[in-house]
Length: 196
Image (cartoon, rainbow, N blue to C red; front, side, top):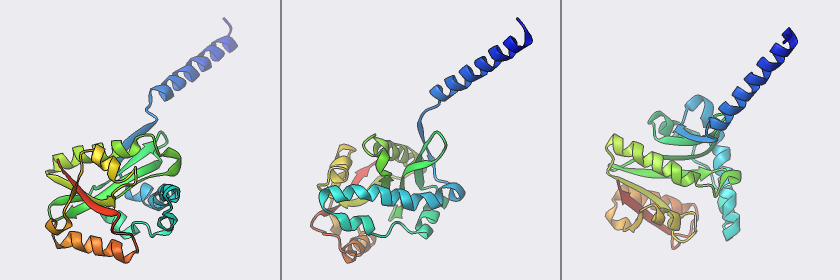
């Protein structure tokens, strides 16, 4: 075998090895959010995710303000923002929350429109719950639309139940009042929770 053939064989072996590595690498993974690389990408993900509300005649939600950069920064700093990333470590979805009265309250769950319907929301919630158990949290809460399939029904399948707002305390009442001031139909909204 001449030198050129050896080089060609070596190149083919390297290419095959790289292709095998790419096949073995998971297409998507979950990690904690990073301030430097992720913060500017989360607002666009949230906007993209909101496009699905057009399918249930809630077009106005597409134009709602996203979680503020300040709040996202605070949640990243607290270790309370998880992202699902592609093999290039680019976020395509996230879940974020904060402590409210000893409960962990989900502030936002968003998956960019091209990635919806693949179970990323469920795996983000599962990873978040595992991490929160280790942190000592006993319960998770959120506010959501009661009957929109990717809201209340999804969370019911994940073990959440509707809870009485009156039993949740003043911080939850403030969240409820803020959502009402934004113009959400509170007859369609609910507070949900589950024990960890």
